[in-house]
Length: 127
Image (cartoon, rainbow, N blue to C red; front, top):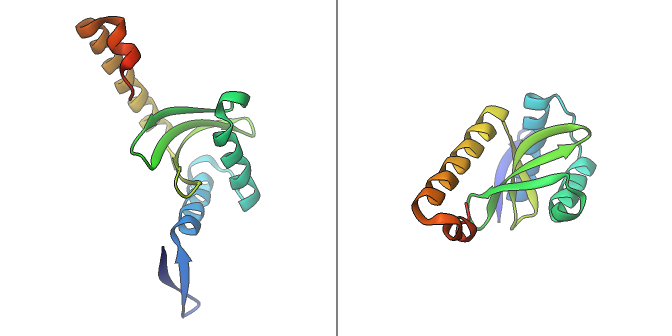
């Protein structure tokens, strides 16, 4: 799907994946001080697709069937990000305070489930 935007006074097409990559690169520069380029976006995508092998990426939770929240270690920096599985594109960089709050909420839900239904309920539960 494409959208139109104006660049230098001309109307041009921009697809959602390209817009998401641009947004991700801007937020990485703004929030982390990292100058992310297209090659870096491809490397980060590879990290996410091989998360069990390298250990440089960890899924925190699925927000929907399309979008997931991840911890990523890239060039020695650990940061939270949202990744779009349908478009295979990082969407944005999540501030550390928000990531910490999400992880605390997940841990609290897990503790509540153990108290309510035992270990079986915790094994079956997916955030």
